[in-house]
Structures are given as C-alpha cells and as structure tokens.
Length: 375
Image 1 (cartoon, rainbow, N blue to C red):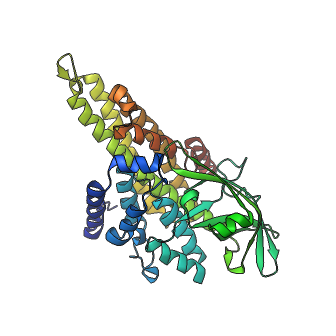
Image 2: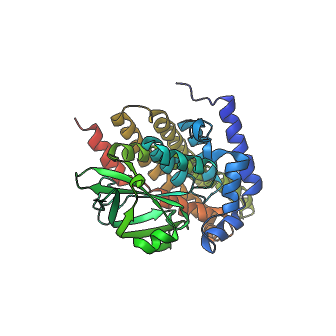
Image 3: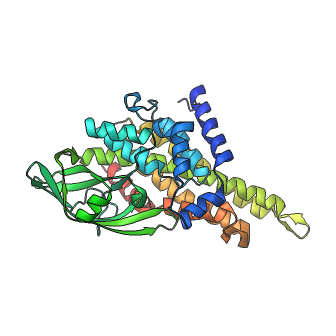
C-alpha cells in the first residue's frame, strides 16, 4: 500500500504548517479561549480566504476544492500541532459531512457558507443518559402544518456558543431519526432555545441546549432518515480527531526532547540519562502506532460500513491509549514546567485528555470493536 503523499498534498501540508507557524501564536489563542469569545474570527476568515482549507474537502460546486479524507487528515494534523481552537472538525468535517449527505438547496447554501468562512455549525446530538450513543434520541420533532416543532435536550454541544447554525437530531412520530438545521440567532433563542454555556477541560466553548416548543419552517428538515448519515459522518470525525491528536502528540514529543536537552541535572542535560531516553522512545513507539491507526481509518472511510466502523474504533482506541501515555510522560518529563500556562505542553495535555473522550471514550470503542468483530 502506498502511503506517500502527492505533490499537491505535500504542498497543502507545507502551506497550512507555514501559515500557522507565522500567524498563530500560543498566547493569543489561549487568551481567546480562556478570556475571549473562545475563538479568533480573524484567523477563521484567513483560513478560508488566504489558506483555503475550509473548503479543501468540500465539493467544487459549493466553492470547495474537492479533496478527500487524506486532505482532511493533513489539515487536522497541522491544526492539532498548533493547538488551533477554531472549530474545523465541528464545522467542516461534521457539519460538512452531514450537509453533503443531506443534499438539497438549503444544504448547498450552508456548504458554500462554510467554504467562505461565513457559516459555523455545531452538531447537537448527544442527550442526557445516552453515554456516547448518538442513536439514543428522545428529542422529538412533531409536524406543525408545513413546519415542525422541536422538544428535547442536547448536552455537550461543542462550538454551540459561537455557531451560526445548529444541526439537530430528533425523532419523528414514525420513529425515524431526522436531521434538522436551526438558525442559531436571537429570534430562535427567544422562541424556544435555552442555552447553558461553559468551557470544556481543554478550553473550548460548549453548551447544553433545551428546545421547548421551537417552531421550525419546512426547509429546516435536511434528512428524513439520518441514522446512517450520522454514523458515517461521526466515523469521519473520528478519523479527523485522531489526526489532530497525532499532530498534538508530535508536538508533545518534540517539545519534550528539546526540553530534556536543555534542562540540566548534576551538570549534564537530563536527555543523557538512559532511563529518560527509554521513556521518550516509548513515547515515539506510541506515536508511530497512533499514526498507523490514523492512516488505516483514513483509508477505510470509503469502505463498507462494517469495515469503516471497525477501523474507526480501532483507531480511536489506539489514539486514546497513546494520547494518555504521551501526554502524561510529556508533562512528567517537563517537571513543574509542564503545569505552567507559559509552555504549550500543559495545554497540549489538556487537549489530549479531552480527545480521549471525543466521539466515544477508549473503553467505548474497545467494546464497539469487540461487538463488530464478534462471530
């Protein structure tokens, strides 16, 4: 199997990496995440207009470039290494994936907005007491003339506080899970949406949402039977978050090696201590396994649903283990400096901790893989 990138993919990696190195500094992004709006709108516009990555994996018909899973992997890994807080996976991968599967005029308009950097989507799917089961949907969608009425609750909706649109799953009277788009504006907030905002452990904006008699127009319905589309899109999101984690783990390992070469004990760099060398080699082995698993799921996204799901769960479980090991070792080898706000390592550790539970925990995906491979 050929794992080499094409010249165009190499150019994409170089372009994104160089842009982030020159224009995305840790201090500004952390200030925006912790004290500001939770993101940097000007950076989002530049990612759309100057770098063009918001449309890299979207169809050319909506202003995209027509790339695929490999392009998404390359972008996500670069964003992970730079600790980018802007909602690329939530909007481009999850939102873009659902909208492409939905099709239709409303979906195409939203996709054009994503590519232009004007639309930000948040996926409202998880519900109280559902664990990581996205098919566990008790939010209801009832017919109201030509329109709909939504009632129910969604939890841990990342990106919701800064979103322009919500993509919401709800169960129809027929029992099927449908997908709706909700304009996340003042009118709808006043008409029937209660929002409880907070920051996640890795300082990303999120919210719990309650819909109470929220009336929606007829064209708010994007998909009548959305269960398969949700599953496929979330497997794509798993592949992207795995790639993001790989970028973060590369940064942790690189920073740790550099730090141990500078930090001295007994008059010599601590990198010369064999015990610490062994620990950093173990970190490298975990990283290489994570890279291989990420490549596997990326290349399996076009396979049949069972193969795709197995690859996604195998990758997520592998990434979860590696993120925990590499994150903890990186902080420990930095000593007290690993817990400060000044260095990237502490922020990377928080992100890698959150990654372990995004789109299903390590234990969840081990169990899912076992169920998929059971005779």
